[in-house]
Length: 446
Image: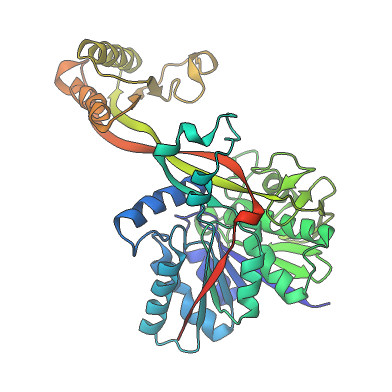
C-alpha cells in the first residue's frame, strides 16, 4: 500500500527553523507543512498590512524559505503553509523573489485568498459566540475578520501543479489533510476518512508538542534531547491508517503518552470536533506502539460538515500598561507588597483612569492567586508587576511610569524596572454562512 510521508515544520509563528531543515534533509518526506497562524497573529498582521500593502505575511517567511526552498525543490518536496497570514499574495511574491535569488527555476507558487471576510461580517450583524452579543457592539473597532477555509483550495492548487502553497486563515488540520485528498483521491464526502484525516492534522499541527515539547516534566515525564527536539512525521497509507514518528537520532520522543496529550489539546467536544471539512469524532481513536518512536493511529470518524464557517474577528479592545521591578534578599516579599500598595494608591491619587488593575508578585501569587499559592517558605527574590487595562494609550503609559518611580520613591533595594504600553487586540468568533465565502487562487511562476 502506497505511503505518503508528511513532515510538520512549525507549530506556531515563532517556532524553530532547524527541525524543518532536518525533516527536509533526513525525513524522506513528500510534503513539508508550516503551521504558523494563531488567532491573534492574523489580526496583528492585518494591522501591519493597513500600514504597508506589501506587509502582513509571517515575519519568519523569508528565513524559513531561505533555509528549505532550494532543497525542497531539488528533492521534490512540496511546501504548504499558512504563513501568508493577512497577505498571501505578497507572501507568494516574496517566495518568488527568494527562489530567484537562490537560482531556482521551474517553481510554481500558489496563493490562496478569500478568507478575509471583513465586509461580510460588517454587512451582517452576526452573533458573537463567546458572549451572545451582536457584532454591532464592536463594529467600529473591528480590524480583521477571517473565516477558516478548508482543504478544497489547497487540493485545487496541488492539482494545478503548485510546488509551494501559501494561505491565510485555513483550519490547521486542513493543511495536512489536503495533500492526502490529492494523493489518494479521497472523497470529500467520505466522512469517516475525513475524520481520520482530521486526526492526522490535529496530531501534527503543533509540531514539537507531539515529540515531547510542552510535555516534559522532570522526574515524571522525562524527555531527552529537548534542545535538539525533532519534529513529527506522519506515514499515511491510503486507508487513512498512519504512524507518527520523527527523524531517527533527533531529540525528543514519540510515545503513547505524547500522542494522547496532543489528541486532547485544544478540542471542545471530542465526539463532534467541528472543522470546515467535517465534524470529526475522536472518541474511537486508538494508539498502538509499533516500534521505538513509532505510534500507529486508527479509529477517527466523522459526520457531514456544517453549512457555516467559523470566523475569527479581531478588534481593538483596550490598551495595556505594565511595569515591573524586582526585590531580593531578606524581607523581599514584604518590600514587594509595599511597592504594589504604593503604586495602587498613587494611581488613584493622580487620577489614572483604568478599567482593570492587576497587582502581582511573580513567584508568589501571579498565576493562581494568593489562596492557592500559599507557601511555608518565603522566597529570596520576587518581582512586583502592575498591569492595567485602559481606554487610551496615554493612560496606559502612566501605569508603567508609576512603577518606575519606585526606584527612588519606594521600598529599598528595587532594581531591574521595566515598563511598556501597547494596544490590545482581542478576538471573538462568529459563524458565517459558507455560501457567502469564496476562495481564489493566484499563481506566481518562475
